[in-house]
Length: 371
Image (cartoon, rainbow, N blue to C red; front, side, top):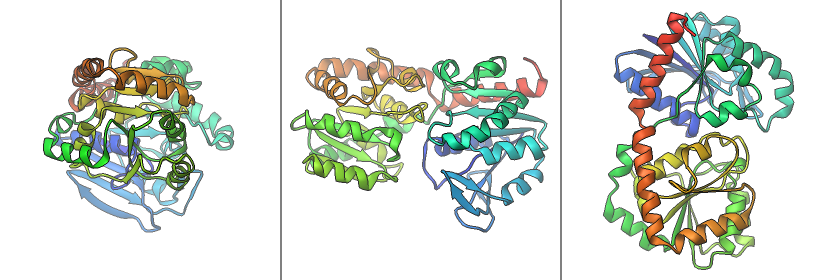
């Protein structure tokens, strides 16, 4: 099968959707499919390369407006492709509109990762086009039941939607180096909370930092970088937390599992619907780590189930985050039980093979034109 994935960025750019596209594309290529990824390049020139069996076309970029890369080369490159399946990863308006107007694929599948949340001015213009794009798609993949229910755009096309949770390579999070994990814990201190993710506004670290103020002696490791890093470092300083908040920057794939093993709790304090799933929760759960997350009406509380794999608290409430951390840090046996249940859920529901099987089934349905 010839598959063309369309999004705005690809490895070595890191992010939840970027990581997912890479995982899916490489797994499909390993199964013998002819897989191409069409994205934009940070520079103005178009580049082509092959990465782990995946053909990658990075179309030259003119500019970036409201987190949206603008590229005249991308529609041109898309027009030259004749895949069996064009697989769009929403939101990226340039890619979706280009496929709708110019695409030559036999069938179109969209993974609807997230509503457009912050760029409301763009959405007012784009919403009519988006509705047409969704109606024209042969299948729409939604990553959780909660998002299908809560998105304002999905219910009218419900009959085309299929729920396929995102998956990851779970094995590497069960193979952490114990000595490295011990060294990290000794270096960072304990008890230890862990946050992993791009430092963007919707991740909610500005609510976790005040919560830490109410948790004397508790350490926080922050893995990741992003546009809010400077502001959040300043907030940690203002709160007198610099000795207890460790901004570690980007961590390699090889090093990341040890960071999960070193921690007592994983916290995802997301504050906006832009956090549609939270794959980092799956990483934590596969590591046997209990999760504290927030209820956003998205996939975050589908992945982390309250009372089963961790705790779910209201968003934008530092006191609720602090209380949840305090309860679990005071109860090692409950942490152990939740962590084990988290590991079991991750292994049962969120593996790569299960996800790829589901996506292939959707492709076959789309090609057969069966509803």
